[in-house]
Image (cartoon, rainbow, N blue to C red; front, side, top):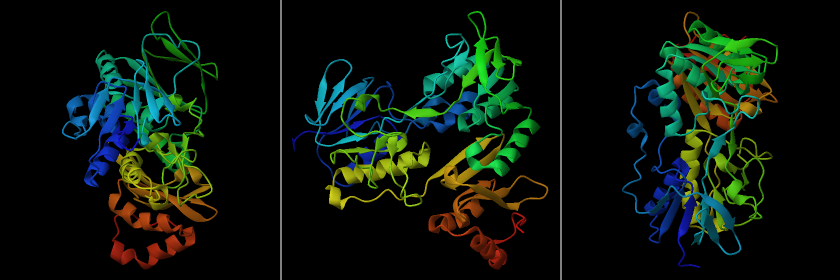
Length: 413
């Protein structure tokens, strides 16, 4: 078994970073990377923005894996893992033995399963092909409805409006990005309205209607929204299908310890969207973070840990960060906003859009959300890491105001 390769299932950002980390650490053995797409690893954030709008070419998303010394098995889907035999089975029937295994399969979009699921004009967005197909349809100047006001729904709505399309965003939640709290969500709703996005919030979708082609979206309140294209953006689910018969413990993803090692098998690790692990900000809970920085940092760490014995492995303690670009503004987040029980806008530009909101749980901040204020976010990150109380953050802002400078007006009481 010591001569078997290290296998990475998932030709993803996390998988690529893991492979690079192993080579950087001096691993000379064979590394096999299995990916179900025909493409080398690429970055996905531009798919809902630049690629979709036509300001970036698909080639610009390439992550540079062509020169990496690994055996690429692209266009092949892994169907099962046998931890006892140390083998990965592929859909074509072949098997790959492994010494150690990294699961970096990412996630897949939730599909619309209600009435109208087979209509032409219904889209999800995950791959380059999805983005290019939607871009082609946008060129026909359709009426667009996004079902879901999370990251993808908001970004697609913003991109469609930048192209001058008629856009309606629907969500059962009362505001966009509900995990960020009422204050951020209410501001963001106004930002979308100001740019011409029609919002139908606080109501779900009963059906997507049409005769072969999407014609309308029927909402739970009985109203209809005319549409030619519907983008379903209802979140994602981890790609764990290949592990269903493996005996590994699964939760919202692969259940891992702090080092991203499966709690069921020390020879199997997970990274990226598919990993659920206890972060230091929430050690008694499992976190699954579906964002670029977690895939990059977790993949790099998992690659290093694959080369070590379990007792030598390092915990994945990097502070989760994420960002989204909507209507020309960048919103950046550090921490775990979904854990919050309260939000507090501490700074806001009186005649502009820059602002900083902190999310807290039991009085201690667990995340910071900065709108067009990247330099401020760096200051808040340190307080998020240490779990500072909201009162202490306010006191620090007051005492350090002169050194920090006044890019955003203070609004705290």
